[in-house]
Length: 106
Image (cartoon, rainbow, N blue to C red; front, side):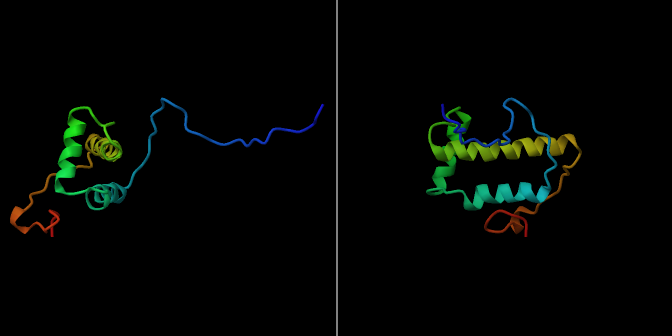
């Protein structure tokens, strides 16, 4: 008989099926938003429309772009809902004529 021990290591993983409560700074939310709409690899203007249509039709597993966009979009929606529930959302009036080319307030 050999005294060789298996090569193992104990690691921590997240339990399946749990809900994680986290305090997320709003700046992190804006970074996710910025990633989605400025950095996410879109082929052209119509690609975003195609992705959103796939999501609306429940075809978010159609391709990897739709799948990953849906992941980030779902995270943003969860954060927005939590912000509303906690009273961290306010209404503002935007002058649409003064929006920048990227449609953000100047």
